[in-house]
Amino acid sequence: MGWCGGGGGGGEGGEECFVPEGPEYVIKNPISRGQKMCDYKTRYLDYKERVLKEYRCPHRPVKELEEDGKKLCIFHGKKEDKDVEKFYKGFRKLYKEENHNFAGFVFPKGFDFGKLKEETGPLKFVDSVFTRAHFLCDVYLLKAQFSGEGGTDFRGAQFSGEGEVLFYGKTFHNKNEADFSRITIGDKAKITFDGVDLNRARFLITDLRRINFIEVDWTAKKPDSSSYMGRLKVYDETFQERGVVTRNVYRLWYLFKLWLFILKWEAEEKEEGSRWRIVQRKIAVKIIDRWKINEPEEKKRNHYEVYRLYNQLMKNYTDTNRYH
Image (cartoon, rainbow, N blue to C red; front, side, top):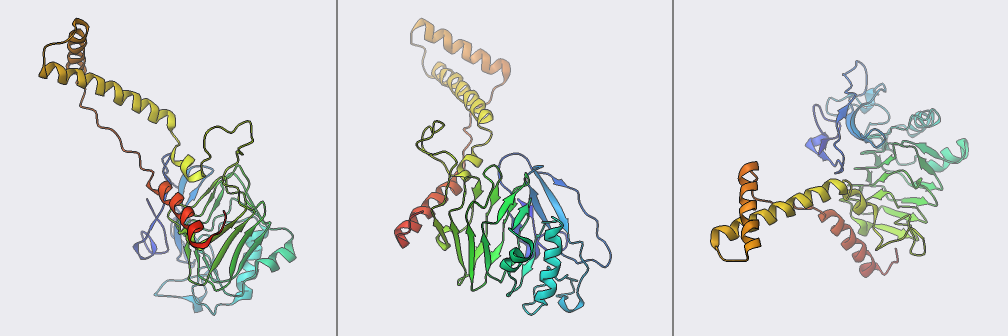
């Protein structure tokens, strides 16, 4: 777990932010507090470097958007009546400069991604970060391209507007991760993934019953492909299976220790048996005593979130008769 949010020293309101299992993530590039800057700060996951980084907003605060003693900029101000045009111009500037870290941005009602597309051409986001962003507007991302080794991060994003959120077409590059873990969907928000490649998308701790999936690809492998073997797996499952070599070695070590202790327990309980079995018991006892081996304890494999993901997909179908 890593702390996220806009509060001092930790998360906003003391909330925790989900950090995926797998390789160890470390906090990198802590940013010291500057003067006359927005007070918003959070941590986000850099998938390229596999590190948890600190984000300190570099933008100047707007006095009218001050809240609870915190100085907030046009991007992080939470007031619904903030200047939409000023927000749009600032966002467009960051977008054109390929400065696509929008962590914690509060997109006001009236902000239009379609207008941005008309003025700048097809939308292309590189190593984009929307961690804990709050969308009060419609989000139409028709054939928008999300790419970059750093992946696309929507972890903890909130979609609380009354309009639609649409990801349409070949949106995510099939070699880069897209993380929608722990997103919050408002009662009136409608989220749709239509024809989107989700073979490296994550949805852990997200209520999938609130999302409509239409003809999406959950895996890059197809049943008629020469690389297809066994059942298909969604990316959340394959992500949790990383480190399979290490786990297999651990499993073999566990089974070896278990075999030694079975022989030791036999030796303590009975003396009869074949000559070879008696020899095995003596060798096992000597190995255990010589190397001071502890009794084996099997490590539990926690795939709870993957099970929940499958269950929610099934519930999507049974509750709504929608095909995914």
